[in-house]
Length: 288
Image 1 (cartoon, rainbow, N blue to C red):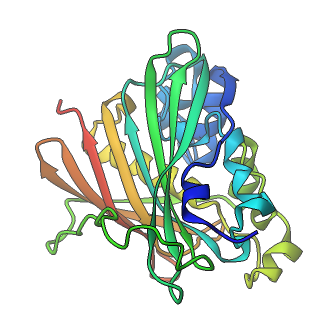
Image 2 (image 1 turned 180 degrees about the vertical axis):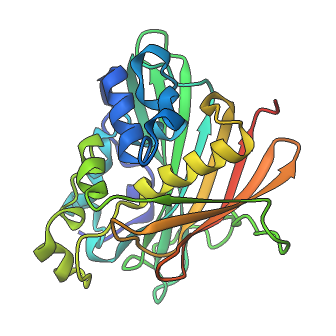
């Protein structure tokens, strides 16, 4: 069956559910580099007696419905699917333990033409399972390079945040560990691209690559340190565009611009290869 705009726009995505604990929050923090080098510097993220939750953990929550795109009935060409952008809005600081549920839906599919493909905006709302209170909204821009000409709108896609032309206000380096991808996959993303050398080679990589959302978490830690005084509860939005893959063990350098009024811009490079890996970063946070 072919890819059809109306069919995918209204695809019934299963509701997701998850019970998580303080241990899950600590595992997530460790999986995005917290505690590396100096555990005392990240004690609020890895010690259960004073635990604060990284807001980017929301991108891993109640995500059971995300694999619907692999259903052959969708007509989606998985070999040409690419996670291009990630957006996160935090409506309320995440508790250190909760039962949550998710509602996922396709916001829109922007048709770039037969030659270029389409961009699907896929949203997932995370709510407290008991009260129904909305905690976070995660939105992914997924490039469907093999599914152009679907008949969706040709304009209206969110515009990437420009990076300031002046020097950054803060630069933060963080070293990813050789086992970083093996650790991050315990949060739920078990794609063999990040663990199996033979599978990575099939994708054209010399070895398994780091999850893009793991690099996303590294950048969030840097931004929280730079503009939120290390308080993760102050972060409200965290958006970016994925530019290039990272290999575990590489050094991630995040450049941050404080734009005032609770807004910041950022981008991330791999130091060893002088390569831009995260671009057009935009964050909103509660002023002190």
